[in-house]
Image (tube, rainbow, N blue to C red; front, side, top):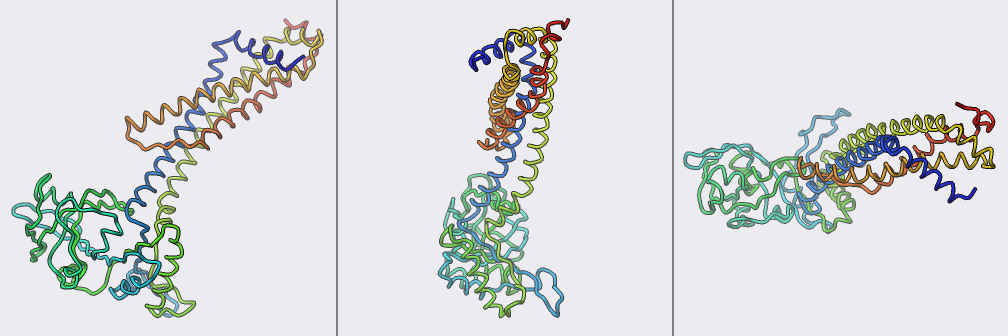
Length: 404
């Protein structure tokens, strides 16, 4: 019997029981759609995290104070310090484009009868270049302001809105921080969350020297921000920073660093690890429905073999080979799986788009997920369809013709 004839007989058999065929496909449809939707949700969340981190700055590397070993005992974080001299050393590295000292002070800010509690972030003029952060109103402070520790600042858009109202330009106005009056030089454009999840629009930027001397009263920094010259050389730049800091802090070979260098790639890996785990878990749960759908195919095919026993016996009696019968039932199982999988792909795309529009959840449909789901559905069809097909092919023609 020709292969084309086998296909025709298989399709005709499926067409005779349209409702049963459709219900059998339902398991594959739901399984494939669930896998695609769950993976799209996980991939969308992961892409959103990566975009958020990369949008927080240009080739950004952060240096934090670490811990030190004293007499073989590791002291707690914060024992080591970062100083402006460290930032000066990093500024001389050829791999580095911009460097900004960084320190934070949580303060109550007052203007007239309005007040707002926010972070006062001490930085220098390179900060806006590292963060790729433009102004909405006014201008950023200058190197001279940093040198003389001038009491000037720029406001995040949320702080400006809470103190002055929406779409108000407060440039030139003075606000009170503790017992100090700060002149507002402008308002930063909306920025959103930082790589650490902090709302960057809810903070005030001031010269780090001003925050250090007039608000904090100390001489050390909370962190140093560095912008590498090239995104392709982040690792090399991180290594150069580590080497320079070890020399600056007089750390002997073999001793642990008393600082920590964190690149964006490391931050992305940390933030997305949990997302990837959850995506795998959701895809695994959705994959169970594909297996359940495969079992449903096997059950229906076994019923079909029983119902068509006389037909199978007649075909075998007039010369059909056992292989032809085996192939026919395998084709039926694979067709059910692939057609169900194709419909599941469309449903998966639709549900992913619906979640993005109505639930405002970021989704990203991966072609790997689509190919895997369809390939798995075909494998399920072959695997669970083989036993019924083999059973049909092994029927004795005489016994099959006698079957009632």
